Amino acid sequence: MSKTEILTPTNSQMIFIDQQPQMAFGVQSMDRQTLKNNTVGLAKAAKIFDIPTTITTVESDAFSGHTYPELLDVFPETPLLERSSMNSWDDQKVRDALAENAANGRKKVVVSGLWTEVCNTTFALSCLNDTDYEIYMVSDASGGTSLEAHERAMERMVQVGVIPVTWQQVLLEWQRDWAHRDTYDAVMELVREHSGAYGMGVDYAYTMVHKAPSRSAHTGKRLDPVPAK
Image (cartoon, rainbow, N blue to C red; front, side, top):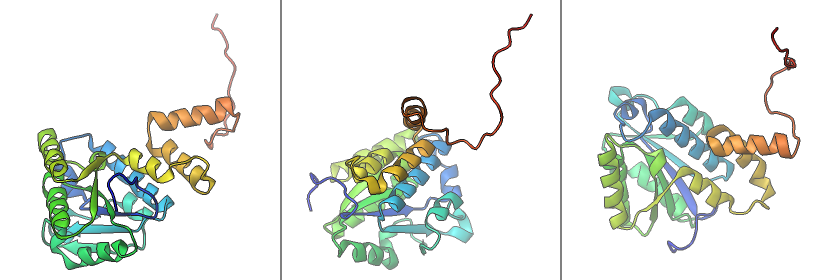
């Protein structure tokens, strides 16, 4: 496995760490609705490409609350690996889940979690220390208690070999070639829902250039202009 080898649907696995409301309440490094959008978009990308996905939670009943329902809806049957430690690597269930996927050649571990400076950093450093896995930290699907905290944590991780990425970068790296038609339509649907201006551009191209019908369910008439007298 080499860091110059790009992410593919066969060399990657995914872990979501503590994407829970109480953790999100403390995020100040980015807009929290955007953070949630990016996290769910990343989850849907993993689903499209059949990326084995681990979801781990901390103190759900006592403190952190339940994982975002939008995230769970993407993976309705995936076990939730509950922990007490802030460091996911301290829990054997998490290690075993990642090891099972790594044994099948999936040693590139894509990470989305809260908070960047605590749960993400301690997991990344511990995992790198104990294994030959590679860590790809999804910066815009992770959040810290301040912009300073998030950025310093990302810098610390990069210094020891963690690769910083963004959620849409991961999606398009998995897709790689628009000739891969088996995932093309699902990817286009995903970007229209979660990719902001890029998604708007896709809608525009489909309807204005390719003359596809609008994906809206709107059935009302469009009334022509009537100049006021």
